Length: 455
Image (tube, rainbow, N blue to C red):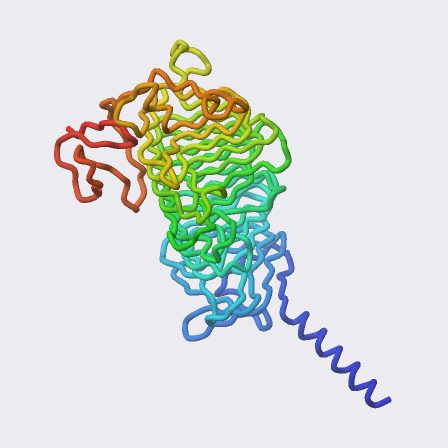
């Protein structure tokens, strides 16, 4: 009997400890910060040597508000997280760091479930992440995400089906899993601009640095997506629609996407515009049959529409691969410039191929693909030469044709490079890569395969 009584006491103590690890505010309209929480006994937040330490799960209830402490350092212990269900203001003007407590910490970081739009700015997340289970949306600007521990699928997790996200002027580096991602059944409109993604998905799973679900609108503008050549499973940008739903629009414009397993891959039904990007050296796939494209378009429903214009596609295992899809347009100049399907092309292909065979464009579909107005990786832009870098009906009668004549030529234009802190890719007329941050003397340069005049 005594033994049973002692076991019951032990179980009761264990239950009390488990409950003690979670603290929740009352939802009575108060405003909290880490400083305010540290002054409450049993809140799970303490002050130690000038740093705030979070132990367990701390919940800011709906009806209350959380304001981020500017200039603070916050350390998260094992399984620790701050869940904000009420209002949240995560903007700071002083450097503020959220980090793990100890090298083996399994911390989760911030989980924001507010019903209103949440602003996040000037925070550094190191080994911890940000989950945006918001109802209305979230704007994340001027933040840094470093070495995310991979306890959830991405450093910035897009939650809240239908919630809109904007991510600007942020850096994501050496995260264990994707930099930005979300659940396959969360259709979150997203704008990503002027961001740097470097060597993410360090776990080397089959997960790209940006692992996105297609939505009403997704736009990725003026970003740098640089891979780690040792990671043979990690692509640059992957956007998928696994449900076959219509009405999704995706654009990728003015980005530099280099040194990944592949550059961009789109899967499923969507309308895609890929314009004025540099897709270079995306070739770190051990088996070319499994990847290595600068751009890969895949849709078994044959509904995906893609317009590809003004890109430099260089030194990938495959330049562009088309698998299924409905209407793929890499250039259509035979129609008037006012036609809805007019596309000047302007894509420049340079040295794409594998196993000693050049592949600028591989049409692995039954559809006709227009690819006029482009410059191909052959010295003479004539039919006989271009045929050597394109795979289509001529090579396999079961495939669709690629219409590639007339070919294009370089043009003198004024181009605006991505406004990010990482260097943009530019070449001088001798083909030597240069860094525009070092200053550009007057002359002619090659940007996106086109001549650019610097006055």
